[in-house]
Image: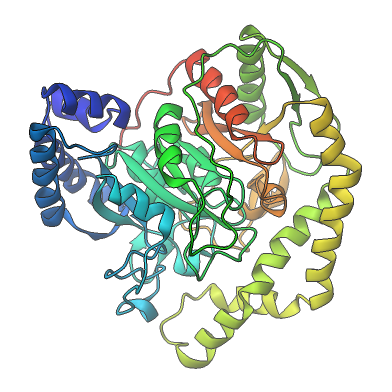
Length: 470
């Protein structure tokens, strides 16, 4: 692949749409170049599940025709990578499991359907671990997905394929899902941007609309592209009773944060933070202050039980799925799921109930008051990115001399417990070993614009990460 082709693969959707409109680039040329790139990265990074490249060329030709006759839609001709657990009518979503190789969706996720209805090209599905239950990204069905920055390191999970493909120019836009950090963690691991919208902002498929921890969100390489996607995905939908009636249209930020007050917790009171991650967040704070914000470090000592219960409540809700798999398909499931099932069985309804009650206590005593004093809270997205590519859910890694699991490096689950709070992860540097670091930005419920404003200021204020060797 020559330099010009490679530059095209890393272009933003915002830029590509301008090229399409001015007719200096055609959607079919973009699709052909991305197919070439996909074939290059598949052997080393493996970010794709099912691919639809022939279909994508056909759709790109239709987009090209619409540009020629003046009927182009908002995302016409932009390839979209969709995680392998998101239902799209008439196609399969295997959830990384051999059990579901023949499961065809009868309805589409409505927020993702809006992207497709606005001209996005269904490019491929991205890999995820089996049942999306892993902070790495490997499965018996799709194999191992690797981090483009270093192939022995995890790209994160469960939306690891989406993040990895974006990082190495194998996708323009992507979709992931997040219930305890499954998009923010891989975005941070791979050096891309991800948005967890507040619950109900993006309407969900009927099988997931009631899951208050869960949301499908946009993934991209720039905040501008996140805003582009989010403005299309959001809004009330008749088939999701939890979708929010308030219509919010995000605007591209100016970079001026004058008057903003931002709280910073380096460790949320209970995480071991890698020194390089700590340094990157300090550099992020300097950028925010240069943009006019006041940033104050705060001490937190009230999160540990809540974070533990956030993880427990989600696995508790999966127990019926796991029990069915164990009873009816034991030969098709990942080995690590046996341990996960044992953990799920150990969690009681009392634990689940306590997760609900502690959320009320924490909001009343801590987070609610925090957001009356500050416009946002920032933390690292991941406390340590150095996670082996095939790490298991109970395998230990070392951070600052302490043994932890990869679950204990993902600093996201608390903000799924408080899922009305929007959360954005943006790249903020590299470790000495060349792995990306992310900053997580959280604001008060349904204040989407503030996290975009802060994320954009970080993006333009810090040097770009560069590109992985892939």
